[in-house]
Length: 450
Image (spheres, rainbow, N blue to C red):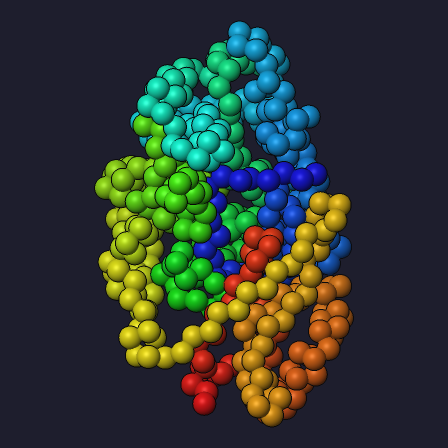
């Protein structure tokens, strides 16, 4: 079922390279329109049948959890809850009760910077766009009063939860992380699956005998092949990014961030990207959102107080801040405090390419289409493959020959340099819609071209 997380999610990952730590085979699966974005599933399993079973289980679990957490699906358990009248109580699944308790925890830990009732602010500012004027002080004061209310009450002795306000609510800032954690746990219950890596729209969960090497891009150059801020390896953990580098709305010619501070009701833009690593995806998801709301200093103080949590922040002016034990220094293409484009300073050329993959007409998930982006010289010889979307495991390999021109050109290239680009160039999926690829003017070996 369609389930879109339309909150502050920014995919800023250039590459996720799968590294198996076990003795079994590695399998990869890609799907579009999963929770309104893209799914990459990597499985270390004993055989193809076990990997295929893990893929099916993951998709089934996504559907089951979507039916609990979605507030776009009016039939979901959470939608039924938020449509209850104040004072009404209902029995609730353990999953939803646990998630509401997590929300209470992070609201307290962040001193109100995390609040599922921020949906109230989103609605207020959507109305402001329609009115072509920012909310009045009176309207904002009324909204903030609504935010101060308790929105539910959980009875610890039963499974009942009482709705205690009528404020709009959303779990977008944490539900995807909860779902990733749950799927990872379920897949590892199989005796034939030894490790999994899940990437849903840029939020990543790694569990078992697998690690993921991740390049994090600067949000202002967020494209495949663009400059990177940091590279790190994640094993038995999670990574999430939240930001507003490309998402804003306009009122009377003024641009506003789509992320709001629940404490004052105003859009915030001082941090345009926050990448958080943690032991579990629900923590990474929630803290990434919090770090977009708090000031940089407040974010670092919070993260440094949390065990096993680290962050990398990018400010509106391009400054970079890290928590005390962020695992690696930034890319050599940037300084420790500010991203510096050495290519631009040297006068080198860069080309940006955008292409769009349409969604399926029936809005159902589907296997990711194969797409190749490459550069040819004036004689038609392929000098650089920029991006290659395909599955390397069955049934994938027999299909990439359908990229006829790329495949024909690549066979010619392999005769010259004897390298296999399918194993080295394939990049992770991005959010459905417009994809971006950067070319720095170099060939496949990294040498400048005429």
